[in-house]
Length: 62
Image (cartoon, rainbow, N blue to C red; front, side, top):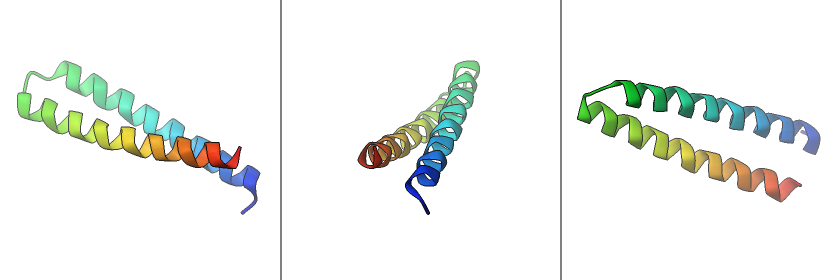
C-alpha cells in the first residue's frame, strides 16, 4: 500500500474512533447507572489508546 493510501486509511480510522467516542460520551452523560458509566468510561479509555497509537503511526509517516 502506498504511503498516501495508508494515511487516508489511518485518517478514516481516526475519524471513526472519534465518532464512537462522541457517541459513548453522550451515552455516559445520559445514563444514571454507575456500572454503565464505568463500562463506557473504560471503553472510551481503550479508544483513546487506539487513537494515540494511530496518531503516532500517522506522525511516523509524515
